[in-house]
Length: 293
Length: 196
Image (cartoon, rainbow over all chains, first blue to last red; front, side):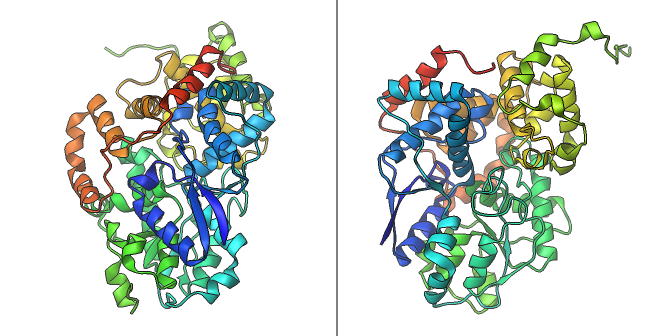
């Protein structure tokens, strides 16, 4: 059994609950143990850095200092958390003045920072640690006939291409292929979903979601697969608004890649949080003769 | 009456301090090497909405056009997708420059008033300082409270959908060691911010 430290981040406890549920279920089925990082705090996302720079690094640094106390890799499923933790580690190493301030701040909280935590995304772990071969061997309900659009969004591969290409990532394509699904060619796979703009400036953010979903539909997709709770929320949460604003808009379920993998592993729908979708996926799954257990 | 405005600047109108400051920002080390190729603007998914595109902002900032830069909508439209940072042939970390400009605009109160984005940033910041974690439902509620409460009506359907699916969080999330987190953040505050 492989063990990882698990940093859920705020969204996986709220709007992204289905991501946490399906991730835990999939890891359980594949013999991966996740230990939630004790007393983790918010990573700061994109907002904190817009207000203060050094305390943003110190805030993320606290999580890294806590994670270092355990030598196992740290799993960060939310793309924003994944990026902020990675960025903090790099900037602390690169800029002595940031390092000094972060170390000093952590000392005030009784913590020490060495910079040894290894921050990983679950997609990276599934494809590169567990391996596609091992996963393929455990598929009991292949997603045959389901046309899945692989959408990566930005911060999982940018600016640090830690485990995949910055512009043409393929890890999720490979994983989805292993589930038996038909992977749709999708050139917009790393185009931004709008981040927090969808909530603050809907006239701007909604159009970004529309462009992504329209292209996914045009290319014959049945469902869109995401790796990030904010992408999932932006692309799924406003589809009724998109339908009233754009005549040619066709709704499409937006699932986490872990939910799709879970289905193929034969896990029950309830464990995968399928009922937490605002745009239900059951009709299209039924049409493709795929029924969740 | 139409207001007549000076549209071009004399050398003396430029803010040299600001120009100097921006070259010292983390990530802007190579800003003077910008060749104005426009790759940042071309790859930016939000540049079509900007008053100044990223390419223009970089140039305005390093030449000391402080008011234009800090008062622009463009810096707040940046969603931090890092496309520009990855594509820049001169390795200017444009996203980091945008962050620095946002911080300076907040410090100086120079951002466009009633724009909800800086309000969200500050509400987010306050919630994290106080509790160590974000409760999404509360954050969104605070945002509407501070900007436009009426707009919340348009979100009723989404809110109900999230409630029905158990995704709406209003119960306050918090870490256990709030005191230690406070001490940690205060320790940074008491020292000077880098390049700010």
